[in-house]
Image (cartoon, rainbow, N blue to C red; front, side, top):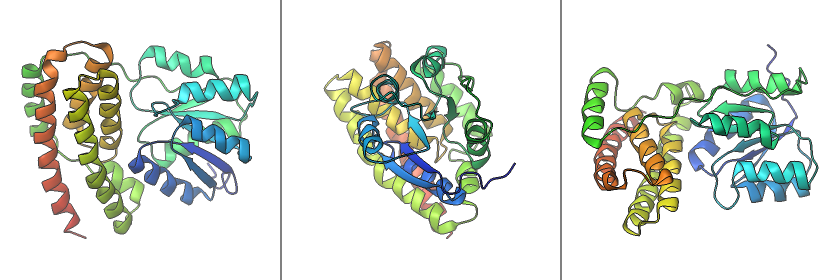
Length: 273
């Protein structure tokens, strides 16, 4: 597949997570595309009104206006048929159906490498496929008690490193300075996110708690800490569905303890460069 078909294309990227912004920008630079970053759906719409674009990469969960709302506005109010690709972590079958229903042309699971990016954009920009190409949704995780989850995670960590930088190494393409930048951004932003989770838990603001947990999960998909990503994913789901709220206190404590280990590992990694 030719990888220069994006050269000169104008791409609008709607993404609120700083770490993911940096990764996507890095990938876009490799394609030769011109890109603009918007921090949420409302900013994306402002950019569309001021400039012309060939494609939108649209995150789903964003503050102020999410990806679904922004896409509906673009289709129904602005009457624009610009290709829109959803960027998403795991999603339910309902969300996958909604991608097509609101007018999205395809979906990319996050984090994604250049191969997945090229394939999806190739389908839309070169083949001119009119039928949405929706990536099958990852099944929603089944809720489990904290005690059982702790046990499972201990077994999991015996077989897999706590921090897996395989994806970051692939995306950085042996650029150690870039990799250090991503790790530093992660270490700088995660404490603020954890503080936000703490605050919303104390206030029992479950909607805001769920959104903060989702933000943490998004960053943890790049600096791949599987056990911690699964943990905050369950926290997000419990708060969103108002289920198992009595387990959240223990899960928040577990999150902080695991993150402290992650910091030690990443600081040691940084010292290698």
